[in-house]
Image (cartoon, rainbow, N blue to C red):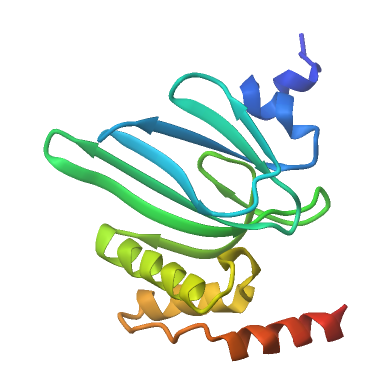
Length: 173
């Protein structure tokens, strides 16, 4: 027998129940010093608390957010990762990502705490320039990814570059 209920689609559970709203959902878990998933930046459109340690946040299509995942065991850090993702609309192609449903357009994907801390510093630099990281050019996050992956320092995101990005976006419509 095939179960055709909406909750049976794509793994069931809280994600599938929320998937019908057109948002990109991210499951966040916080178990102090063991498993920590959090949003570094992003405009959250929906926030649902599932348990004391777990919640699901939703982002509208086109929203850009940074998702940090960290886990440790008795011997130290075992996972350290940051992804900068653009939430996609229902008809857009996407890349799957753990804890993100359905997935998104991955602008930056970095693993390992030394590199993750470089990304966090790049985010801080965007904020220091007076720009909300959600509004920074998608190309900047790709640039940060490529430079860090190549072992080089990313260029700073300046207010002039941001204004150029806004003009380009205005022209492209």
